[in-house]
Image 1: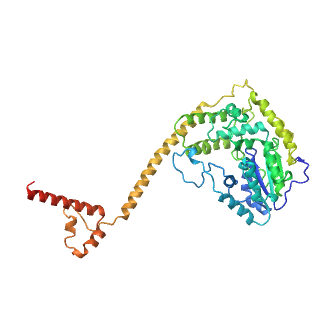
Image 2: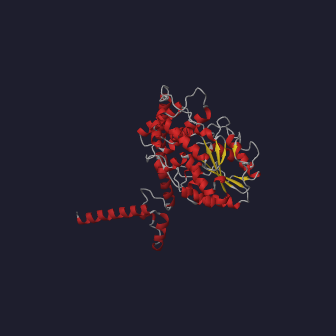
Image 3: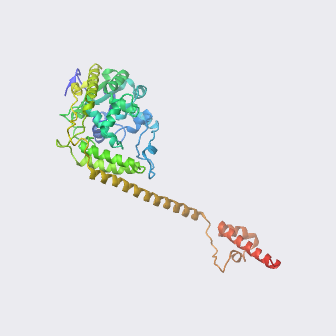
Length: 451
């Protein structure tokens, strides 16, 4: 392990380590490993608050950031993605702070990559509330070409239908407003480090450079920073989904084309997309199908190679001057390897059969969802109707075509008539009896008058 000008990676015993990613730099692996080792970490003096894999809800609450997390929320069939965005209440972040402050002094790990999208003001707030003098920032980095490719693939998982070329053109155009400020802050590696170094001090920021030849490099680094025994985090996560492997070119194009078909058709139910595509097709694909050298990968198109190399050089140079603790080979960030060969016939290839099957599965599930929604609505109406009927007074007096209300009340004393009627007959029955009597009286008057 390379430590640039660092005597020891071990952090002070009462530090709050905020691991902010950014996205697509191995955060899921670290978080999943910490979740599995939560009890063991605590035994060795490191607290990983909560029970979830990470602190996504709490970080979003602190940033007032909208998100699509659906756990614990009521589901309405047919809801679209735009209808489901919500901002977690800030009380979620406050509960996490209360939890951290209630523990005895020890190292604490807080993590979600959305913290990397914080503005200057939001970053100051996070550090201040955690305790600026006790906060240490961990940042993991990969070469910018890999980051750009991974971000596009991640966007496909939530419905993006842009080709990689179209999306990359928007990202490289600084004036394109379709790319959010949050995403731009995630991608600008040197600005990200500079932002946090100004807030907590350069020596309180550790930058970990991913090592392609050692997939356990990051977990080993975190074990060393937190004073954990070897293999507390390392080697505990092997799932392709949780290690967040990227998609091959064929896989990415197949999902992208399915997204394109789905956006062309009827209004897309996010619940169906989430369960069929995200949690069904993609989970299985990433868990069961493994990348090999024979699988073509998504690569930077030749037209963008110079622009991406310029970004890589800029980030590497500025990070070297940042004064932060750098772990790993910083020069590897300056090497852009994934450049596309335009003569490759597989660049725009997708599996038409798989695309049609996946699109059809989503439409079929949406049809089933609509039918199920009808059944739910009918069941709900029946339940309300039955509840109303249960509140209606039971007709204790047996009424038949030969026994009318007046006949049933014939032997009831006059002083008890109101109570007896209220107890034994529904309002509907009483109104019906009055209507019948009125009609009889009307017919009798007409007969008498000869009308």
